[in-house]
Length: 540
Ligand SMILES: NC(=O)c1ccc[n+]([C@@H]2O[C@H](COP(=O)([O-])OP(=O)(O)OC[C@H]3O[C@@H](n4cnc5c(N)ncnc54)[C@H](O)[C@@H]3O)[C@@H](O)[C@H]2O)c1
Image (cartoon, rainbow, N blue to C red):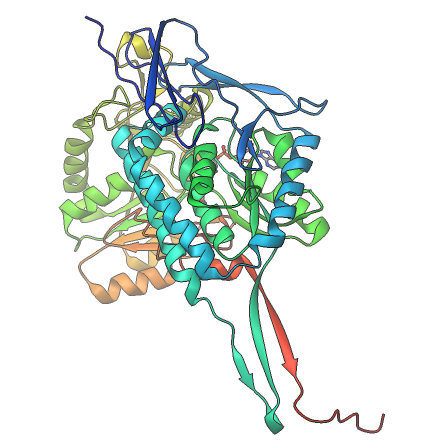
């Protein structure tokens, strides 16, 4: 008997949404909703690759096709674990970007006039819809990224949390009332910026879409968002969920495309702010484009973060922390603590425990519950990680564990599965220790003193995150205060509650996401002076 697992992301009036194949079974079920909301199931046997049939562009509250003007190109979207082509997407060209921005500009007129309370309610409702579609979203995110399903569920749940957080706190955003002499006074208003452009990377596609849209929309901006071309599937689902929650048409438009589309968006004259997540070189280009028009900009960029493990730590927790800092999402996490500094006296004990844990990680089908290592996003990304491992070996490092690409089973022969890798005998100046790899490659370094390790930890162009494991509270706070990074963890790693701001120092970026402070970055302050007396013009 054929066994299959499939799901559908069809909802909110979209007729036919996403379907997937699982395993080797070539049974394609296609679901659509009829007018009463019941799911109709159509079945057809096929080996045809293009599984996603609906357009992934979203304009004025509905999915639309790109217009294929002369600036646009097509790109394939693959399931990273099998290499199957899910769909081919037409990039948004100049006319599509114009249409999306103009629609958001029009929608701004009404949306910006609502109160934060009214807008917050839309976010709260959208978060509820996200939660009730969590499984569909998580499975679609797996298709997009190749990450294990349990991680995708956690991601989506966290995104709903971010939407709830901003929906909840937005009504408390207030201006100031400033008393001045002679009964005069001034007040400040926090006003939205206008149309915000967002561009995302591929490692957390739904998270990027929700972390950017939630704070931007709730304070009255409208948005045009472009996901990474490697992971275009879930941003449009988020847009549909916002629409279902009551977000007016045009407030959030999704465009798909590659670098050209991103450049068109970031240089568009009617965009008032860009919020970008991606690599340092691309972030620099986006910032340049913004500089031309003096646009606001938030940049969430790369990292090569240090994790410092002192001999007085709780070793079990430190090992778990190092795992969290390196092996989630196939190591494709910007804040990863990939330079693990271990105090010399506990190095052997630390490595023993670490290897014992890493050996238990299960590489395989991302949709299976017990899989802990899924597929990297692409062959290119996997090759990059492998080449860093080779360069580390060439420079004298030893692979203590992993280091190889694997094929978990024949159906994943075209996948990009890399063993979690631990490098020892590393030196600070090795290429693999200095540069962001964006794969599961942990470099273990030893140190002797606090002063020495701080100097080495900070000796990097990046400053996204860092961590310290010790039971000595004073040392923990002292070290955290001296580490040059935006997100520090004491006795844990890679935890992202929506209440706390996240973002980088140095080349890791500008501005923050999450936390109340982010609302300031999607608003501008207007100060109104009020004269209560006759105008004193002095000698004039
Ligand atoms: N700090 C963070 O929060 C964070 C989070 C996730 C990923 N990242 C970083 O992202 C990088 C990996 O993502 P990536 O490979 O998708 O990055 P990337 O810079 O190659 O691409 C990011 C996005 O920019 C678009 N783009 C490319 N060229 C552009 C241009 N000239 N103008 C405008 N947009 C353009 C891409 O289409 C994509 O959507 C890593 O460096 C990682 O550390 C940072």
